[in-house]
Length: 182
Image (tube, rainbow, N blue to C red; front, side, top):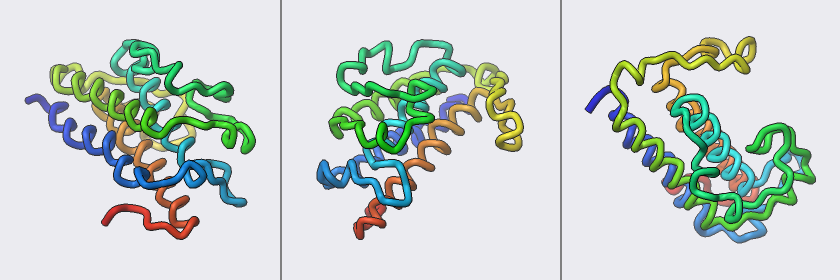
């Protein structure tokens, strides 16, 4: 196993973890928006994996997204996607209008993870260390305008995803529910 193969267990975890924190939520809880925050749980989940899919497959793997290659548009129909295919720039009202099937969102998260795991288990150390330029981060986040392929996968598939899963747990807490299953 090369250096990238060590990432597989983390990828598997972060793509199955949402099942444990949202499985028992009602449709109303999945779509609830607090007065002080625009997002909903279903939007945070969809956005996290949709963004990861587009960015990792497009910028790192160099292939079409799982969303495109596995025809997820019919299973995850979102009319307004904002300035990106994954919801950046949506208004509170547009976020509230996103009404997706939880089982489909969770299946999509697993499919994205499976694709990334297959990739990291097959790449060489040299490919894992190849540079990826992220010009949209220049001046926004320190030290992430250029990363290796492996760092870029970890940044989006673990860092960005866990940020939004934390948001899911925050929303659950605001509803008086327990966040993580621990």
